[in-house]
Amino acid sequence: MKADKVRESDEKELERQSHEIEEQLFRLRLQIGMGQTEGLKKYRALRKDRARVLGVLRERQLAVAKESS
Image (cartoon, rainbow, N blue to C red; front, side, top):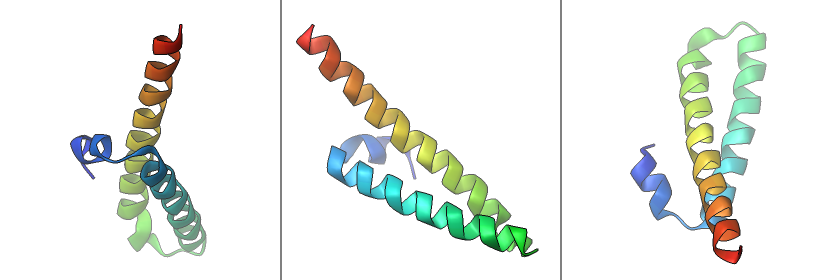
């Protein structure tokens, strides 16, 4: 997922994506714990996607706080 695509989404969509990513990460952690290492690349990619989504959400929170000051 590219950062430009993340920035185009609205806040509800970003929160939904964040929740879905969290669920996928949970499932992948279970798979990795059981010895299935095929999910390792996907796990790393999902962690980066989650960081992008949370970063954009935080940018928007800070922008709103700055405007209201």
